[in-house]
Image 1 (cartoon, rainbow, N blue to C red):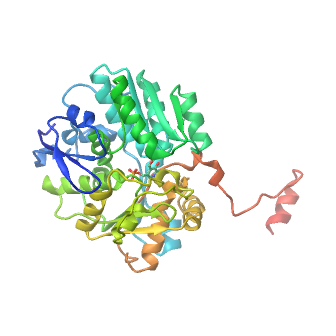
Image 2 (cartoon, rainbow, N blue to C red):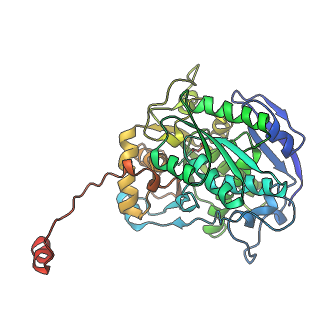
Image 3 (tube, rainbow, N blue to C red):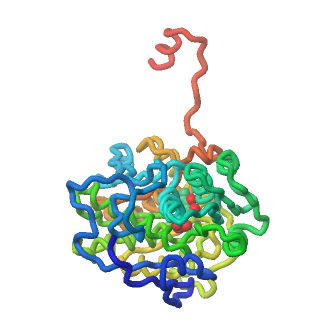
Length: 403
Ligand SMILES: Cc1ncc(COP(=O)(O)O)c(C=O)c1O
């Protein structure tokens, strides 16, 4: 592992303060996005011949230290798909999907859960906590069950039913918070301090960002150690996109690449505080979320400042799309790529369609779009455009129907 040279805690307005250690950063109170820097060098990254699967392949740039990995679930190493149907439909011959629906709980949150619980296992931690719009809590519940830990999760009262069932079945203690996600976030952090639980909250725990940045390393390796022109990702609290940016910056700092791809962040119009701030709104945060994309329904994003900084530095932009376009992206991804996404997971593709139509992305560019969450957990949004054919059971009926 490369030496950690600096840890900064950056609040949503952009003010920052240092933290001495990972432990101190996790324990630090308040709302901030934690950023770790290392002594970068070419040997921090795995060579093309080097073995190692999933996120642990990149442990040279994870604050983990030596020793075998104990976390039992395989995480990371998700496919980079080159879907012919979707490429043809959108007229984008160099489009790729990074399919993050393949984790143990079906979302990109599984990367962060793995690194946080690995850290916990190494310290003999017995319990972990998080706030969540649904996926982080499902991920922590499954991960804790696999690692032999307790999970205490705080979710908004209107959380999706299937996600809730997963948490409960995995044995998590679930608190449904009537006051919504922001209250759940503060409560989870306060409870972590009160009970000594490991705080897995997104962004504030630096390990969540460190784990998610491995997506950038994988994209680079999967494209034959080269970069795409554009990467499109959803924004909720912001760490998914900020981690992606960090991963690409670190590739550059290690001398592996000479630039960072343009980043396009996508929010839902029903809850778009980062988009509003990007467009210059004076008071961008607050208000109850009104979107089907619950994973990105975050009224007061932890990484509000960081994510805008990263998008700006990349030369990209931030978009907001209406729920109808997010909903329409679900069958598009299924029929054009065989990937089943939940609304928040399909939002980036909806954003890409807008970006292409607006000329923000050239059709010939090499584009990677993240699909961050599986639609298997939100069956209420799987709405087929076709109907079935009811038959008695004779071949003649099939022939008649198809000719
Ligand atoms: C499926 C899905 N996509 C995207 C996001 C947004 O990620 P972030 O909060 O890191 O911006 C979430 C967050 O829960 C999610 O569940």
